[in-house]
Length: 106
Image 1 (tube, rainbow, N blue to C red):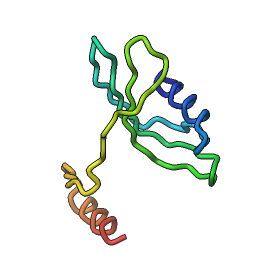
Image 2: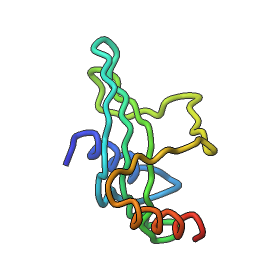
Image 3: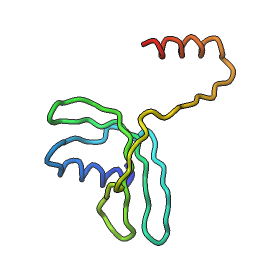
Image 4: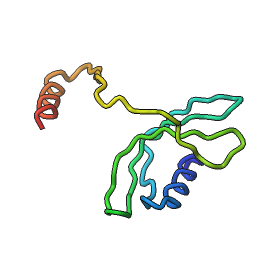
């Protein structure tokens, strides 16, 4: 497993609010800054043990300062929860159209 995910697991289990472990990493994007460190966008499935046991899908930005072994959260970062999302679909139009209709209704 990736070093950043291992650090994330360590931070998650030292939390006083939520305990859990990363079950699967769906994707990870790194923005490299050779002087300061790297920012990572982690998209993962996390098995949360407390307060309620469940598996949640989450995306989170974390920062790893150069020379550090501790992850940090970016400050003043907020997701745009009402962002417009575009899907590019080619080929199987009829199947995709039915899937999208059902997805939007459900």
